[in-house]
Figure 1 (cartoon, rainbow, N blue to C red):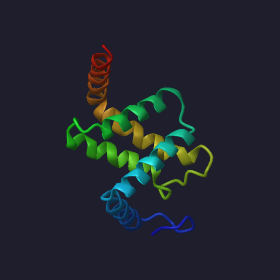
Figure 2 (cartoon, rainbow, N blue to C red):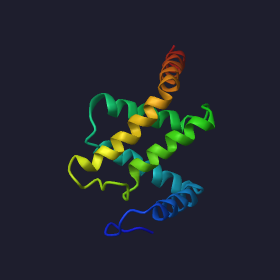
Figure 3 (cartoon, rainbow, N blue to C red):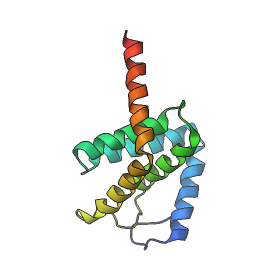
Length: 131
């Protein structure tokens, strides 16, 4: 497992993803990972519209009715957001969030149509449940 003073490496990232995957296989691990992601969203210095997009991506990822293939890309981006050992450590002012911003923006751009259709379906479903 990587510590903060170790440099980033692809091998360390792959090991961390395997560890998180093993933890995600348990109910406790899923709760911990979801909790970490929710904490990252709350602590995020990413503001406004990007934070709204991030929340929509998170909701999409957690929706069991949505297809798996796009969720893999979304899950990877969300996982990158909560990993303490990414390319630029988050404790570095501004630059620390630049790589997170880049990953989230890339995934949003690739799946924008899917997200916008999902937002409409979700809104329709919520209105139907209310009425």
